[in-house]
Length: 319
Image (cartoon, rainbow, N blue to C red):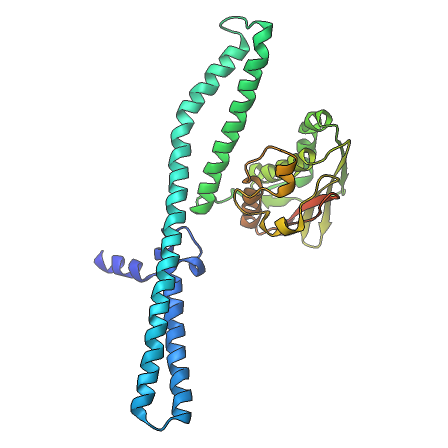
């Protein structure tokens, strides 16, 4: 048992797991990397000094001085990285605990609101119905935010493995587009579909892929103004099926594009047009697609619209 504990302490993977970070981002890896740099630097300094300096004692002093400086720098850098990793871990733990604690009382609140709106315990005066509708709508938005934060915490802690099964991405896209018609019509946006025929199935977690499709389509409709148009495409590209949503909306400023898949990030165009959002949807979407060994990306031009896409590997026949 003690031997197992010692080995776990020596294992980079085990030590990095507590930070929920890839190995190359955790403090222990930085410490090992700095150690390798110190050794290489010491050897290089010795080789150069030996070539130009005849005094062995002076060579030893130079090597020790360079190594000592690099060791101090390595300690400072590793300590700083460890502080940042700890802060990130504590922040995520706080969000996880907070959202889980909110779930129970919020579920009771939703139940009471739904009961009141259903008028099963008494009718609601017409002049008050609007306020109950606002209360119900905002409670739904809050519930979505809580669920997204819980999803992000699962992604960060590696507790988000997909349940992969074969399914038709084409049928899924058709259902999502159909369910989004009312939102599109209310937003005065026309949705067109361009779906290739005879597409093979993909292997994936259907509910999570649906979440990505809904996110792309919802964003496209939300950010399209003035009787715009959204085009949904699905086609085969080699060993992948590619899903695209192209809109004629506000677009994304060039300086914001490199941050678009980061947590809690919202572009200037989104803030300018006062569209609702948490800045978590695209981060979750990217995590889902990458967990399926797929690809994801976008192209955008401010004022001209955006095209968001993802590709999933098809199920090869005979496998």
